[in-house]
Length: 160
Image (cartoon, rainbow, N blue to C red):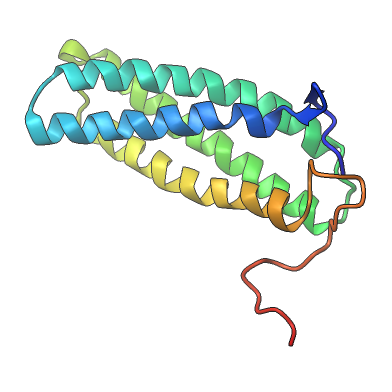
């Protein structure tokens, strides 16, 4: 099925997801660098990068929701898309709480809970990114009107 939210002939959601995914992962990397080096400037960069990733995630989520609403009910693609979307809402919530916990600290330096939530969000984002890949690569969502919306999981062994 073709994406319903398109620009210049291409699906918008896959174009937008690279920003929040990259920004949130980069925020975690800056948190790790702060832990390793003790340089508090990395905490500030992580906080600003995280905020940009959350905003970008909200924009990507809107376009993904528009596409998901167009997937026929009762298909595997609809179920995978629902888990993908709900998981990404949780990713954004984890990072948003992590960001809010940083507000009270000196120079944006995160406490243990802010770090844990960021790491958990990054781990979950890996899972939801895989689900997004399953939607596009395996099930053909946003690719073309002849997509295979009930194809089995890519984790299943191919038939001989």
